[in-house]
Image (cartoon, rainbow, N blue to C red):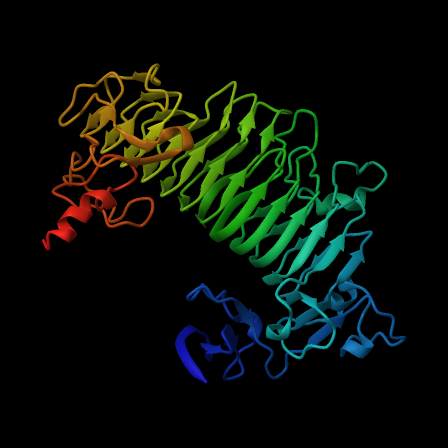
Length: 486
């Protein structure tokens, strides 16, 4: 066994080690597994609490074996809630693939690991097939899972949860499970990996998929599909609704929902996430809303629509991300006190207030810069070079070494066709003859080391303008050099 590093020490030592391609935390010196803090992502491996002395594994299956003690596959529980009730902090719950109908939310109030996708013969989670899940079906009424203790949930599908239909006058006991239809979590460290939440409906002010408050999150490889918020005048939050949370959200897809994510306060890092095809036709609230000390990187916001503003960001740092086809009667993207680096905005309108753009490409319909905004090494141009974007910039905005349609006074600024490779196909890389090549400046504090594709920034004498750093020569221009022996 190879010990990688010490994770945490408290009257004993928890060690992180690698075994069989997985990443596990083991209890040493009598320290309860439940006190192990959430392990970080290491080299893309998955983390889980491994069974150790004193920790038990409980089994759940749809198969009726006639014995329901839950201590083996042959005597498995029929109910996930029965397994949670029997478990203690540090225990694991293994769920055989199948559909588990529930009438009340599954209440996870212990520090347990809940793992689905088993066939019923495995002796270790690594022995599961890669494409199997266990399904929790709420039957169109109620919340799927409520979590109030540090827990890990993996390889589950949660579907058909609906808190909009509940009449709390007749069922007041259900109020404690609201809001949040698919998952409701509060005041805990929560790990959610490889999960699908689909076809769920939240209450008027809750989220149709996930509602988390005061949680430390580790979400990875999750899909949120066809969810929506409830109520005629609510915020229609189909995507996750996170309030005062911290942690990491990675490889999450939110697609075909009425209402996207709403992230308020806290400090969450979003990486390689996609928010697509969400709509806000039931409300004038932004479809995508982030406010707080959050960071978004390598993510996509595409084809989202609204009767008002589509995407709104307040106080964020956003890098290497794509905004494409976000439109409606309001702004496609609106940002306040935010920073964008190596981002591309296409077929969208952009409004920034007291924000910063560095090495961004805006093939946008319109752009407005207000407040004390700063723009450096950027391109603001339209895919339609005949009409160009509507550009409105306050005098208080500082722009330098950027190409602006119609021009703008400032050091190193240009007003010329940037010669994109194929803007009609959303290819905003630069042709060899582009005036934007080597036309940027290194004299800025936050110059990125790479471009949006990860290409090293500053290949020539100076950084290029825009999100893409040009490198190399067309093949035809290299052939004469090769043939001449140069």
